[in-house]
Image 1 (cartoon, helix red, strand yellow):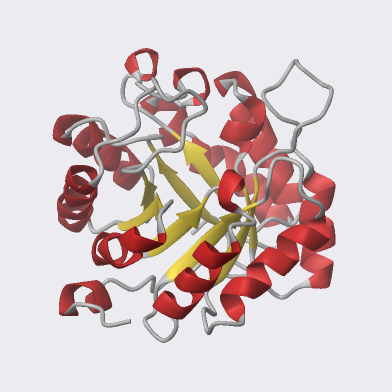
Image 2 (cartoon, rainbow, N blue to C red):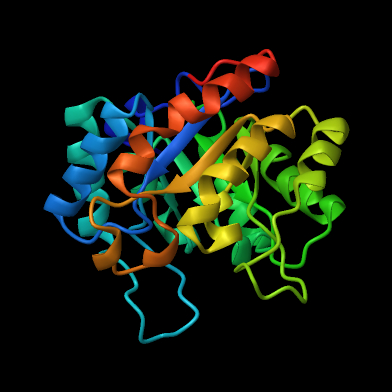
Length: 268
């Protein structure tokens, strides 16, 4: 796959790796330049180096906001460059992989696409040798073995920088959006050398649980977090209930540091 010079220049140096603890934060989706700028500013001032944001959004309802597409990618690229941040964003269509790589250091594969094997293989071959990475979310009802084998589809095509993400599974429990399976983090880390991070925002579906679950993730030997934040959570177009406010995001590193220290880690 022939990548442009700009795409090749965007590499995920300072990768999420076992033994470190990195936080990826930012809005669920890119809504406008102003919104993403404020989000990036908060992420930078919070001391983190990766910003998340969706340009292509898989939504349960076809009538929900689906993202800005290419315009959203361009906004992320421009704003992240200004703040010196690395971008994590989802790709849904194999034909968009090259475009996404021009604007992001890490490609996210959502839970609904965990077993989209043709997409996984295309991503693996696309990121091979480029320095780009991929974050693979666990499927809503996937076993740990299925999750790890899905990652093999990427690595077998040469994509080495793969990060596993536990984001909660669907159970009978209704008090949270999903059930965060921290035991899966521990199991995965004993079965693979790939780094494992946690998305407490999607698991909880409630912002009041995000920070406590983040602390628990550190104790469960996770290598990082993927959290949602918004400068005006109440006005977010997507997942408003689970997005951290700027104040909560600003305090996250300090809240996690004692737990990370106890585990011999540092929140990078």
